[in-house]
Length: 286
Length: 286
DNA sequence: AATTATATGGAATATTCATTCCACTTATGT
DNA sequence: ACATAAGTGGAATGAATATTCCATATAATT
Image 1: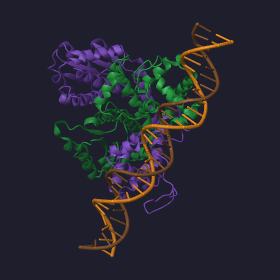
Image 2: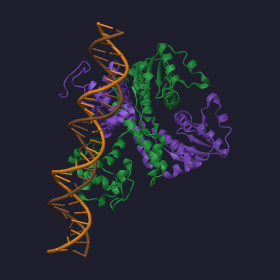
Image 3: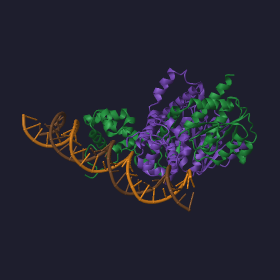
Image 4: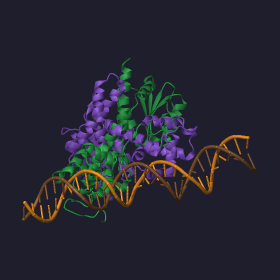
């Protein structure tokens, strides 16, 4: 049979989308009239586009729990010549996404008037975030990380201290550490009971404390309190002049870039994630 | 000949790097003692890693102006079984790390010499974060953002709904919007009063709701509740299949890359920041 | 300069992989 | 309830692709 021939009622279009966004839209639009196995493929594909981009028909079929032939049928039902043809679209999506950063900035700078204000703001934040991240990566001191892990490794309970702007970070750590089976107490200052929450620290415990200019006095006070009881203190803060720097056993310096006066939080977040996972990893090594 | 056998002075390692960063380092280190055509390949590969990830041996060979067989030799000189084996490394650079925690950890443990494990983890997260950010930027749809702002602009009070993994994001927004003078209510489910907190919504209000797989049922229920009372709903979620997608007036799709099975949160965070500031910006324009 | 080792191009081969085909099952319409 | 169409799994096929092999060229060593 000649390929690419327009053939049946299923094939609503002779020229299927060549970009991922359009493909996606099309799949969603036709969701209802796709047969069972084909929706199964559709669901897997839209949820795991990266896998589709790189996998082989067999490997993808296995993960989506269908036969390889079903992938071909799916592709053809959408108007593509075959699976390979469809896969190209998934690959182009990754391609476009990768070659991006520098070109995009230049592009934005050029016709920034075309883009909406909101998009420029988003771009500005994304840019600031990336700068923060790469700065953190470059300045990161292995030794600090190791010592931080030493401090936290043997702790019975880990107290998480961080209010206001830093609270998202501590609340994330509370969630993640909990999932990893590490005992934590998140000082959230609910009902004004911060001091009480941190009241039972012992020298068997440790604390992670996070604060940036202007350092919330409550955070500093709590950290001091915990420290006085003999618990190890790991701090994440933004400069040598931070009260936390003097107070902590180990401290990370994180400099967040800002956009229009708003500091990002991504480098801190990322450091927190890494610290969390590295800690779990260490504990598991036993 | 048995494959993967350790063979000659060129092959300094029996277990070649499985991640791109290490591969790159290795190639640079051995630059001098590689034969002419092989440096030619090395140069092309490091300059065009994306092409290597996507192309076939023949297409890459053509672009690098060598024979396909040279690619195989290059791969083997580096200790890989063949070109396909090497290509996997280039692909893994692009692909979200979807392997399970244990596998990845084991893998990391093997090739973890040199840099400390913790540093590698940090690096991995930084990398995943950057990929997420650039993906978000590239896929971002201006129209969605505008419509989200339309929905939120006139709202009296903005309800922030997001629990568990999404809570850091909503708590950040609560902080930032508060600072910017925009009235918010953060549903934090303290004392199990989530439903009560969201009880007084009116159609004058709006909600921002955030959830990712596996969608916390409470978040979905709360969003529905708010929706039923006539408030506008803006969602941030990870796929069309999210219950929030069907429910919301406008929804953002954010695909976070993950590392070691832990999804990052940076793209979501950044989008949240942008949304926050853009909203303040709009309101100020009046 | 002669000899040996190493590198290279290109054709031959082997392998992987998408695709097609067919028997069988499930749904749809009369 | 029957007939017909649509959908599905799995093996067979054929195309695309990596890999190996060998003759030839280039460099290194004596």
